[in-house]
Length: 481
Image (cartoon, rainbow, N blue to C red):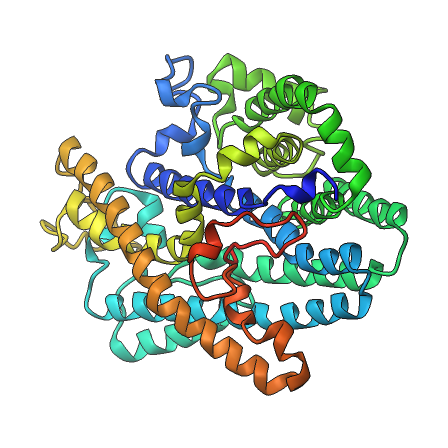
């Protein structure tokens, strides 16, 4: 048995738990202190502590979805590769791919629809009034505008469809990533089905070529939903390969204490590239000249940021790739990510993703701006008929902002706990019922509890079994993104 197979991969869920916390922190920054996305509050001005490299990473965003994409690639490949490697059963591996492909859409669509319906009901009762009138552009953009009841119902049906076609959902814009993550999962299933019979060296070559292709492709989000997905599948493959794991064990000290810190330092510095105003600080301007515009005339980019690509997303994706490889090489990082608290956060991460936006735009903004959205004066229109710029509501005080952060975070995780206990369980049972109807009964032993297994808990919840180490080839116990 390889060294890696004696370890667990609970770190996958722990990493997802950190990601859910990053999603909350970056959206709080967007709502309450948007300049944290910049390297300084003004050009040539002194940076605040949370604006300097490395420390700015949790607040500046662009990390959550790339991590979810990487984990999707890893998780979707884990069990089929286990069957192919450890048991030599290609037929069972392909059946696992088929069942996983069937389960994936309802396990994402059902919860997303429920989250959208909750936001729709709140919009009917005017719960977004404060968000519609506040001075935070990002919050106003995220909050659905008030409409008459009939128009609101029509908008609801469009939003339920557009989430999976154009990625636009006015009731919960954070669901924009659901469609590409679903498509990404099917990319992984297709690659697995096409390569499961290949020799190891050629499967690895396919994964490497896919990573390179998506990095060289300058289309929108190719680094996020292409390269990171392929990297997750590649690392899932290598985690089953005995010589690779023996090599990591043999050189564990130099990998963990030399190579990994170098990767994290380089990745963290590149990943600190700001959302905008990169010319406002010397360090970000140097990064821009080195990675984004080396020639100084926009004629070419770099391998990390090719010309025509999104610099912010490319630099963040590079950081996530460095982090992913570091975790793969370092048992110490894997053990750290397997902490019970992070596992709890990871188990509730999907629920946090679906609920936090609605809670922030309602309860969070009520605390900062007031529930009623008053005082408010209709700005009227200009002489040419265009609307005048309103006098937006301002926060009551810094104390109200601090209170909103604490209360919003606590309520979000309470809501996530309740969501996993009741809503997600119901969605898992519905998916399981559908699967039993569609697939032959003789496969029930392999997939009878698949609805919950897709969330990572074969027995329906984080029981004693959840605390037991998983073999590296085992099914990763993580919820879908």
